[in-house]
Amino acid sequence: MFDNLTDRLSSTLKDLKGKGKLTESNIKDTLHEVRIALLEADVALSVVTDFVDNVKEGALGKKVQLSLNPGQALVKLVQAELVRVMGEANQELDLKANPPAIILMAGLQGAGKTTTVAKLGRWLQETKKKKVGVVSADVYRPAAIKQLQTLAEDTNLVFFESDVSQKPVDIAVNAIEAAKKQFLDVVIVDTAGRLHVDDEMMGEIKALHAAINPVETLFVVDSMTGQDAAVTAKAFNDALPLTGVVLTKADGDARGGAALSIRHVTGKPIKFIGMGEKTDALEPFYPERIASRILGMGDMLSLIEEIEQTADKKKAAKLARKVKKGKGFDFNDFKDQLLQMEKMGGVGAMLDKLPGMANVSQETKDKINDKELSRQVAVINSMTLQERRYPELIKGNRKKRIAAGCGQELQDVNRMLKQHKMMQKMMKKFAKGNAANMVRGIKNNMRGMRM
Image 1: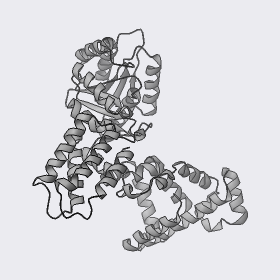
Image 2: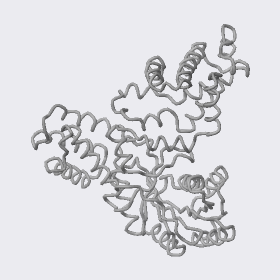
Image 3: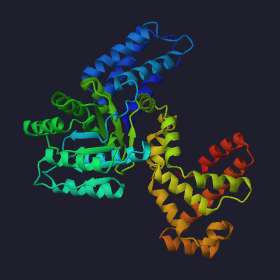
Image 4: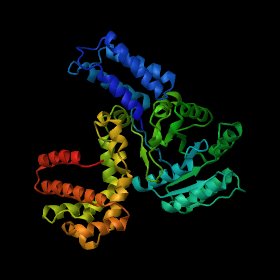
């Protein structure tokens, strides 16, 4: 997400390096480029105009710290303005209500509303430890009801059945009454979407809202529609008392116009952002972290949180004890690490959150292929249990057998063995407690490892 905007802003702000101080003349061209970058990112014109004016005012005023060089000063101002435009801080869901707390999901057809219902239910269940039920009031698409049922079963959510012969209000009311009997904490109501905003849809969802009085009314919108997302959000906000927005398909949006326009146009906070198709690909929207990503500064806080949430702590502790005892790092351990990376969204998702990625060429980024993780796991699965425990046994004919077993080339097996040796070396340095040597080893090994 934001790849195009990140590249443009990074190259633009570099031009100020070497200047003695910020003046109207030396920031004129830079702000012009910032303006173009935002417009190319499909940010609403009103947002772009205010953005550039505020940065200019800050640059020529007294906000710039003397300890910063002009380039750093302008980056700081741009980052602060990005945070302001997107909403200052994350706004959590307000679930302070007599259970069950009701969440109503609204949006156009194709925005990913039904999938987002399951994602949000899973997030509430795993992160907030809530007992969650879901129901579909989309009586126009039987497939939507079936889709939600399948997703609910996959994520262990309580699913309340509904039928196209029923009225949306009756479906929601019946689900809420059933949820009370089962002592659920939250009920998420999926609603019908349309291809465009129309009076019939708005009238129906208004009646549904009035009948169930939800504590949260979230508008689900496809981020790839750019500033149109903000326009649609405003139309819904005029009809419904929205409490927040969920941006979907952000992983496929290289521009980021929706994220930078919605708050300004609607006045409503972006509460969540969807970064993939899987049901675990939903994360709270933190404006300050997103601003850092846009400027190529990474997002280490989110990366650390993901590791804490997805890491198998027992396995990690077991591996640490094993390495410290000098028992080595075998292919079973290597496989665990690869599966862990897959669980976190793959290499690409992790790299997006690392600082300095703006300085990595697009050619290098394009070489990152998360399918390589699955290929590597396949190579390990083709090994015998003995070979996994004692990698030094893998020579000659064993290599050929492993390659044939997983349908890959001999060079793929050799590359895996080489990467495993690199990991072993790093783990030995870790076991000795020499962190500085380990960091140097990682840098050296990265030069020899193919992306």
